[in-house]
Amino acid sequence: MSNGRDAAGRRLTFATAGLARTRAPWGRAMRAELAALDDPAERESFSRSAAASAIREGWLPRLALPFAAAVATALLGLLASRSQLPAGGPGVLSVTVPVPALLMLGVALAAAAMTRSFSFGAEVGLTALLAGLAAVFAVTALEGMVWMRERGVFILDGDSPRLPATNTAVVFDLFTTGMWVGHLLVWVPCLLIGAAAGRRLGVWRAGRRR
Image (cartoon, rainbow, N blue to C red; front, side, top):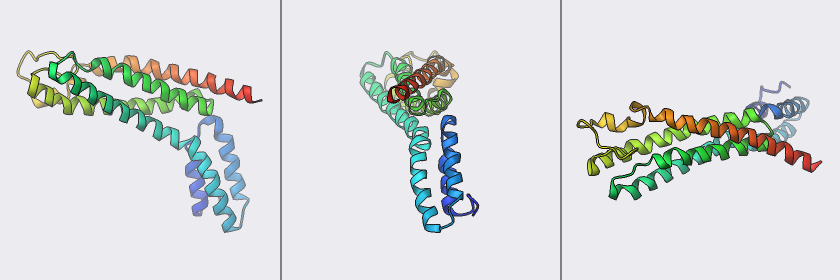
């Protein structure tokens, strides 16, 4: 029976597609073992078990870790905004730059350590970066409107506009000022450091088990 023509085969093919390169041989072995089974009940049972293991090592860290980091970024950004709003400053840059950077470092480190793969850690870290950028934009756009309305300043740095600021200028301040570049200049090295450190940690832990 072809490995991908029934639900069991499609399930396992999808689940193993999320694996890191270092685990790709295991994924191929699982698909080959499934292909050797003819009994539908055996195929279904084996597919569910192997797919669950593959998802825990592949799609789960790929999606869950960046999502959790993005949620944490948004919540901490919101807390910083609300705590600073009464004073109208100094701005949330002190949170939106370092906090996501540390979270991305941790995400990349965890993903790389689980798989002993720098590339997988970097991929998961990049996903966390994109999700974190979206979270920062959402917070600064929505809370920025509040800051401008109540304090007359921009949320990122607490500066007053030279000219009356439009809603568009307030919402897209992160991008129109180029501050997003400054965020990335900190975030990217952190996720790469996390991926490299995670791979070393994973290799070291694997060596300790032997």
